[in-house]
Amino acid sequence: MGSFAGSATRCSRSRRPSCAEQTIVAAMYGTWIKNEREARKFWEEVARGGEEYADNAPTTVLDSWLKGMAEKRGKAELKPANLYQGCVFAWNAYREGKTISTIKFDTKKGLYAVSE
Image 1 (cartoon, one colour):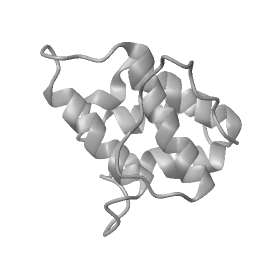
Image 2 (tube, rainbow, N blue to C red; image 1 turned 90 degrees about the horizontal axis):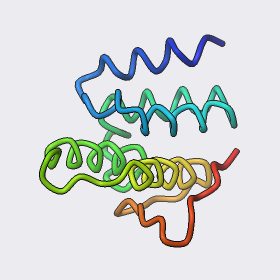
Image 3 (spheres, rainbow, N blue to C red; image 1 turned 135 degrees about the vertical axis):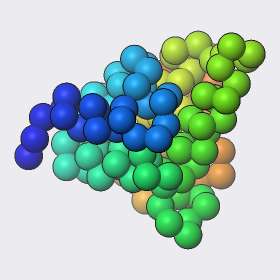
Image 4 (tube, rainbow, N blue to C red; image 1 turned 30 degrees about the vertical axis):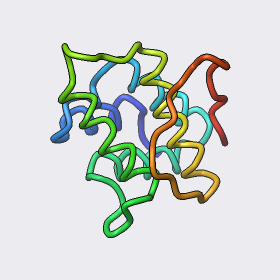
């Protein structure tokens, strides 16, 4: 299929600078380990702005959320664990075929497990 590093590099070169953050790359790697083919599709879709014409698609909601976090940088930054949690939440919804309206990123109950 290809290397994880190659996919992460392509994503980090996209128009969204937040994709290059270490915590997001960690989430990317976690999804890659579980399902390389689907992780590639998921993260490339996020990098393109999400699923076209689907405002509640996990990739669309995650893209918007990450852009919002990038705009808030230096003001109200999230902890790395919250950023990771949000990415995994969207991935899990994507794998389960669910739509979402917001990203759940609270870590008080622990981190989500990455779905296959």
